[in-house]
Image (cartoon, rainbow, N blue to C red; front, side, top):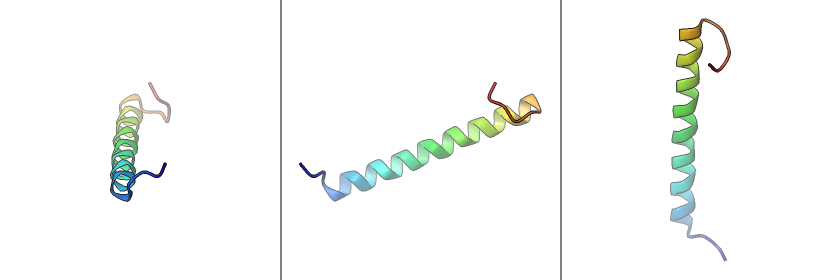
Length: 39
């Protein structure tokens, strides 16, 4: 069963946004801790 192309595109977009948000949170944590590690 194939997913509609629109749904796949939407999921890719949501996934990319989530990854970007997580990356930003990780960077903020690194800055706060003063070291490259997840707190």
